[in-house]
Length: 217
Image (cartoon, one colour):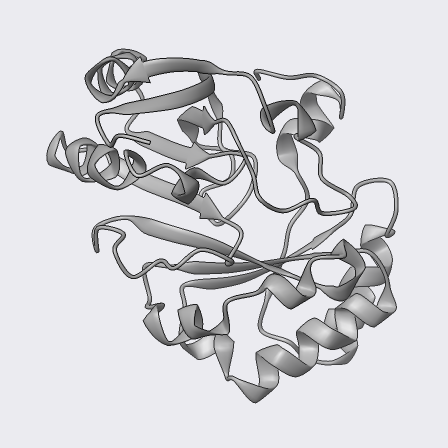
């Protein structure tokens, strides 16, 4: 796939629903395609389809929506070569740029000005074996690690990895998210308090505001 075009599922303005940037006005650029099939995936509509656009058009549409914050998400945005130069161009335009990636793709080539949100897959996702742990050594204090957890076993897996790798001191935030309608957030909060984990428990703010089935908000 050439780097001067991208296949885009949608571009829209909303608020950032997760991470330490939650609640801030944000333009979301959702790219089409993903090579993982997490059991609890909430964006399967982005696996296929989309519209091929030039990188210049994507950049112009994202900037035209007027938010200081721009998120590239998917699907898996790092499957498309054009994502890397697009992020650099958005940074050059003075935007604060975030990328959400599964952690299966190599993040080494991402522009250092970008905030990388790496979603490590817990066993309950069905894709834990696909985690690229080499990425952990590349992360810094601009970056965030996200764990989506379905149950106590997922939590314990994440807890041990966080402790073993001392992750809370190596990134801006370690984020723990309950699978929507599957793990009670109150349980997750209780576990993190009992274990004195220095993490951020987060809910998907956009689902609380608009409902779990609404797209493009």
